[in-house]
Each structure stands twice: as C-alpha cells, then as structure tokens.
Amino acid sequence: MRDKRLKKEAFPKLALALVGNPHLAGNWGRPLIIEIGAGKGFFSVNLAQLYPHATVLALDAKPPRLWYGATLAENLKLDNIRFIAQDAVMLEEMFAPEEVDKIWITFPDPYPKKRHIRRRLTAPSFLQSYRKILKPLGEVHLKTDNEAFFDYTLEVLRLEGVTPFIVTRDLHASEFLNEETGFKTSYEETFVGQGLKIHYLAFRF
Image 1: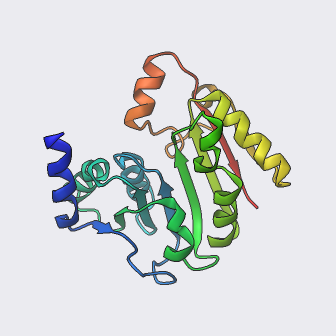
Image 2: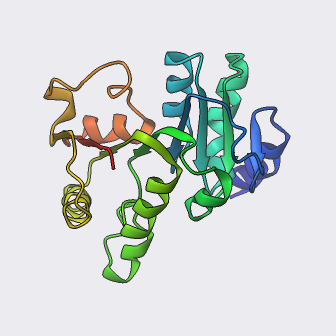
Image 3: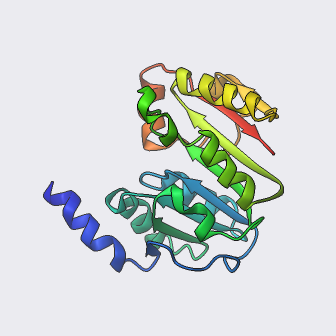
C-alpha cells in the first residue's frame, strides 16, 4: 500500500506524466496512437520506439501503474510519448473529432458481471467514443486472454455493423504476429507462461 501511494505521489512529477484532462484536443500532433487501459505502459513504450515520428499516449485511470512506463520512457529519453492518468470515459473531451489514428486496448478488465457490462472497453458507449475520435479508416486493436470478453466484443461489433479485418484466437501462432502485435505486456507474459492463448482482433468503423 505504501509503495502504491508513493508512486501515485511521484507520478505527476515525472517529465512525461499528465494528470486529468490536458486540454490539448486537436493539438496532440499526428500520427496519433493511444493505448487505453495501458496499465504499466510498457506496450506504449514499445509503440513509441517502433514509431518515433508518431505521438503515443498511454492512458490509465491509476497513476501508480503508469509510473513504471513513464519512468522507463524517461530513462530511454523518448520524447514522443506521454502517460495520462485519466479514465477512458473522458476520451471525447481529450481528443478532437477524427484526431486519433490508432487505438490499442491491451488486456482490459473483462468485467464479467452483467451489472458491470457498461464498463467494458468495447461496450457500445465506448465504441461510440472511438468512432468520434478516430480519423476516417482509423483502427482499433484489441488483445485479451479472456475468451468470454472476446466473444462479447465480436457480438457487439456485429450488432454495430462492424466487421473486423483481423480476428484470431491464437495470436502467437498466427500470421498477424509482428513487432507491434507481438510485444508482450507484463500481463501477457504471465498469461502465455500459463499456456493461455492470446485473442486479437482489429477493426475500422
């Protein structure tokens, strides 16, 4: 508990850290890639290294998690990434319409209880926000170990009239594995070590 509190207090002091709404909608720079529910932010760090000419934003509601990625990015002297302690419900206030090129959702909380469905990051309300902030032909990518959540997402997309252009239930054994998709988050390292298959899909509106 003490370690978490210390990281929460230390996070805003980091050079790459932002808390709340930075009020930069329309001024983030392009191409713009965001990771929602970024956790420790290591996946976003990898994106920033892969795409040095892009702006990469790692969003998570819990600053102690983001502290890890922000500290690593600072040590790596990355200047094209920021870590934002903010809830995803604020997306439409943080980004201008059609400002975002790509959204990554990596191992989100599946919220298995029915009363929490609206919190799932692929619930219809979130898809509506993604649709607004993505530029035409912008992409959403999802990685998860949770088959029920994956099935839920596929069904929501079907009801929304969206057909994914990539769907695989075993990413690491598929043709879609590359430097971007294959980077393992800390959660993913654990899941793969347990023999779980990684589900992956990508879609455009």
